[in-house]
Image (cartoon, rainbow, N blue to C red; front, side, top):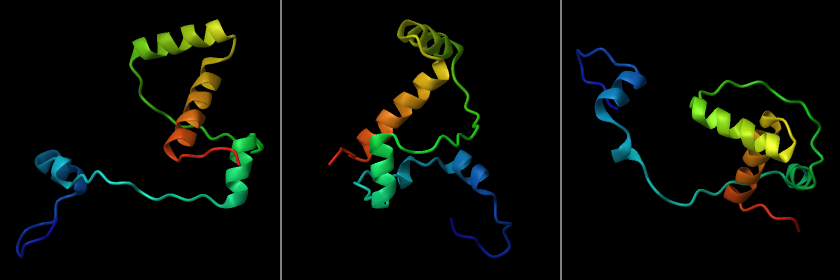
Length: 98
């Protein structure tokens, strides 16, 4: 996003609302590496539980489905979300136990 003389620079949200982002997306493999000790801790589940609160918006039907699945598995639904996130992270980063 360039600026032209005499124009006030617009903020990024306004720019992308107007322009969209699809033209700027590139689909290519991104290399991502974790420190070896952190990787080992994640794989063996040895990370200490210092959980941090976040806020996300979910469709009410998704929340209901999450709660139902969690009840069927006899675990709290937030734990189920954390498990699924951890599995997704391992899959995306191609982390496997050595």
